Amino acid sequence: MAQTVDELRNEIRIAVGRFERERTTAFTKEDLAAVCDVVGYEIDTSGRLPPKAELRAGILRKIGAAQEPNPEDTSSSFRKDELEAIMAAVQ
Image 1 (spheres, rainbow, N blue to C red):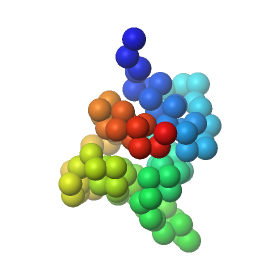
Image 2: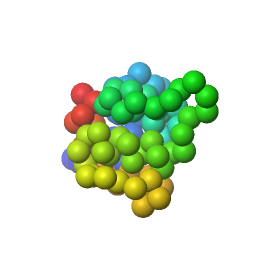
Image 3: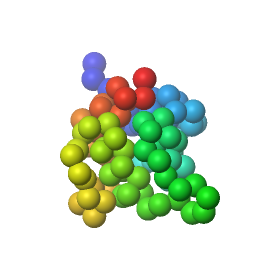
């Protein structure tokens, strides 16, 4: 049976050293920053984390799921195919 979006998010969280969530929830900035670290997208962590859209766009660019994603055009959450690509990249 195919994995749900929530199951994929939790597997990604675990793969990057974050905690599994019992309830359905989108990635936090900290979750996204951990994914950025694993896929090699460098962010400035000396102050506040960048906006979620910027983190998502950088992850997609780094894993090759998008050529030059614009943070303004990036949806508010990853689609299932994007989560599958991220999961493959972090394993």
